[in-house]
Amino acid sequence: MESDPREGSSVETTAEPAVLRIVREPTVYLVGRQVVDDDVVRQFLQDHEASWETDTEVGAERLIEAAGRVCYMSFGLGRKTNAEYIGHLVSVGHGSVLEHAVWNLIIAGVSRSFTHELIRHRAGFGYSQLSQRYVDESTADFVEPDVIADDTELHAIWMDAVQKTQEAYRKLVEGLTRKYADVKDRTLRRKLARQAARSVLPNATETKIFVTANARALRHFIEMRASEHAELEIRKVAAQVLRLMQIEAPNVFGDYKLVPLDDGTEAAETPHRKV
Image (cartoon, rainbow, N blue to C red; front, side, top):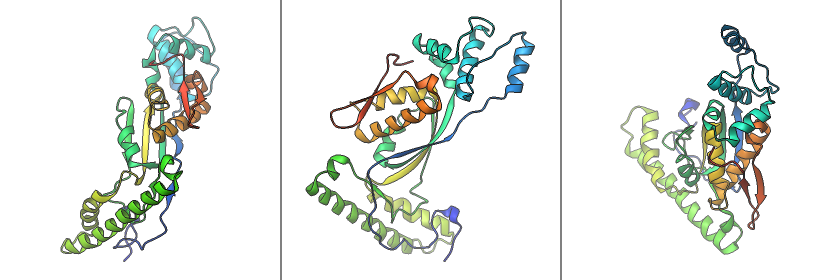
């Protein structure tokens, strides 16, 4: 029976068994950024008998500079390029103004163990994650750690475990759906079945998460997670985030560099930590 696609599945029962799909690399999508209302900025400057021009068209970089200049009403003083201005803010640790620059990201191809680590970053972050209560996970992808994937014997053990848990999930959903047959609301019936059945799904289950974060929070995330001491999966994501942000807002993230590690991955370094 067909259903509203907003309910997370197009069929009443779980999907037929399919080839197990394995994910090895995460993907980060930059989906949102800020814009500046130039007319209102000009009105503010006019109202306060100030003038200001900057040399960047990047909304986040302009907002950071504007915030810094509001702190001291220094719009007409010590003119610098935007890169020089933000560079000075970063070098002296005036990090609060970085909080006014905000971006939206979607991170996919990651495990639920990754998101458990990610959401520990609270200040300056907002999250919306795929719901296993609403989404049928009977054909979910799974994220395999490199250290297991690169070993034939370990890979076989891992594959066997994942396949068994996925099959257990399917059977549980089907059994629980029958158990809740007297629940008339189809969406509620599915939710009740899936929220119980998901208890057998492993940390390796692939998920997607929408993330909103400001520049200061992202810098902290990069420093903590694009580190040789961080777990490999989150380190990969942090490196991707840094690359995206260096293209998006080079004046804010240009002080970082990625250096190769012995295991073939990368770590981020900057002379300006904990801004």
